[in-house]
Image 1 (tube, rainbow, N blue to C red):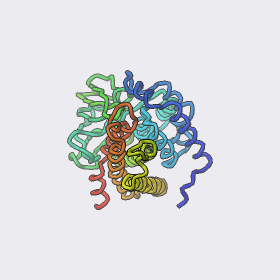
Image 2 (cartoon, rainbow, N blue to C red; image 1 turned 60 degrees about the horizontal axis):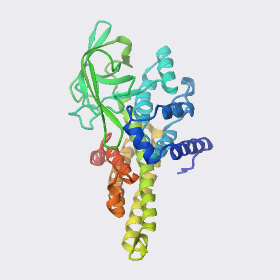
Image 3 (tube, one colour; image 1 turned 120 degrees about the horizontal axis):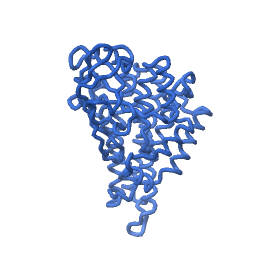
Length: 374
C-alpha cells in the first residue's frame, strides 16, 4: 500500500504539528486542564480559523471534504501534544451524527456554527450497564403530541459540561439490546429536567454524568428517522475508534522517543543507560510495538475509507493492538525512567494516563479481541 500523504494532507499535518509544538508544552497544558473549562477557547477559535473543524465535512456544507485519512492526520498530531480541546466529541462524534441526519436550514445553521467554532457538542450515548455494547440502551423516548418526552441516564459523556447541545440516544421501541428502536435527539443541557454533573478525568480531560427526567423536546429535535439510529451510531463509533487509535499512535511515538533520549543521557556506572544490552533490547521491543501499531492504524484507516463498516474486523484488530502495545510501551517507558516516570513534572506520565483512558473508550483490548474472533 502507498502510505505517502498527498500535498494537501502533508500541509495539514505540518500545520497541526507546528501548532502543537508551539502551544502545548507540558506546563501550558497543565494550566489549561486546571482552568474552568479545561481547555483554551483561544485555541478552539484558532482551530476554526485554520480550518481544522471543517476537515470531515463536505464542501457543500462549508467543509474541506476530508475523510478518515485527514482525520487521522489531525488526531495523530493532537496525540503528540495531548491536546485538550474537544475535537473528538464535537467534530468526530457530534459532527458525524449531524452530517448524517440534518437537512435544509437546520443543517446549514448547525454545521455552519460548528465549523465556525461557535457550537460545541457532546454525544450522550453510553450507559452504566452497557459497558461497550453500543446497542444496550435503556433511556426512553415517548411521543407526546408533536414532541417527545425523554428519560434516562448517560455516563462518561466527554465534553458534556461544556457542550451547547447534547446528542442523546433513547429507545422508543424494542428491547434493551435491540438495534432497532433507538433514536437520536438534540437536547439543550439547560432544559428543564436535564442534570449535567461535570468532572475531570484522570487524563486531564472533562466528562459528565447526564440525567434526563421527563425532558420535553420539540419534534425537530429528532435526528433522522425514529427508531432507525443504529447505523448512524455504528458509523460514528467506527470513526471515533479510528480517531482514538490515531491519537494513541501520536502519543506512543512521543513515549518511545522520550525514553530513547533519556537512556542516552542518563549515566549509570560511567555509561549511558542505552549502552547496556538489556536496555537496548527493551527499547527495540518498544519501537517494534510502535511500528506495528503505525502500520495497522494506516491499514485500518485506508480500509475504512474504502469499505466503511465492512472494515470492522480490521478496526477491532487495530484497537486491540493499540491497547496492548500502549500498555507495554507505557509501562516500560515509566520503568526505564525510574522514579521520574510517575512524577507530574515529567510529561511521560501524562501520556501514559491518556493512553490508559483511550484503552477504555469504545471497547478495551479484550473486548475488541472478542469482536475480532467473532
